[in-house]
Image (cartoon, rainbow, N blue to C red; front, side, top):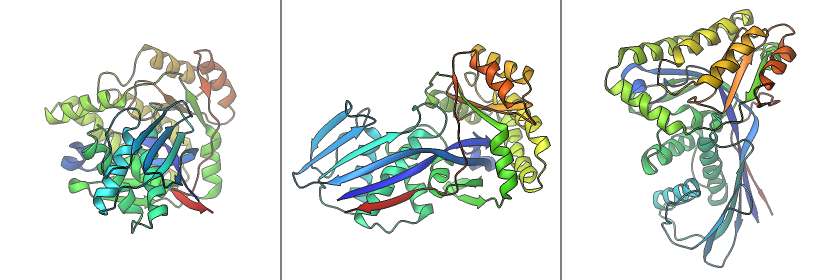
Length: 341
């Protein structure tokens, strides 16, 4: 028997960073993001040999443990063992025996929420197998707690909810880990036009988001005015983008993305660098009206708003920097799970 699950990656369109505590606890955060047709996939094969085998990405990364109620947390399998340990403890389960194979259809550290989406996918597989009483909000919050509390990984809350719920959502974040997911009812032709005008570009660099987010957290804790004001502006950006999409005012989106670009770089020192700045300026010169670096910043994916018929020219301009463009489509489904007998 095989238990399968998949959860979609996301692009953060506006407000990224305001979902990170303590900013969201003190001021309330707002993010607008959209899931795309790149996925984190997990398969569980039930066994009876009293072992647990983790296979990550490809068959060269694997680890076999004796079945225990708690497994060691060690790289690169920390997300797998972290989820297993929490599930067994939370539901008071005996040691399980299985093989787990997980992979992500984008490089980790690429800014598309890969780690959190993988955690959601793994939780989903366990929930399907063990028939766990977990709703969407439960799964997203559990994924957040496993990463941020159990594994002590720095980051925000948006990725877990995007991967679980799917679609284009306006997310609100408050103190005490309160999150409200507002699905946006965007007309199909507006969604298609936005999809067509956005160019997703992988810089062929990866980054460790935890260090950038750690600095962002420290800036809020130390009451650094520049960083806090930048986050206020990004929250405003998310609210405005929601209105523009619902009111079909796509002509304003590029300018709004550029507004966010300026302020996001003030949140922490390593969000941008010379390469990223040069790519961004080249995209604007080629016809883009605004853009964004995905995720915490520092590398990974960028995207640009290319109005009218400028997308090909913008693509040619940024390809000169050695990265590659990534075709994508928006998705409406979040986490999905199924069983194969």
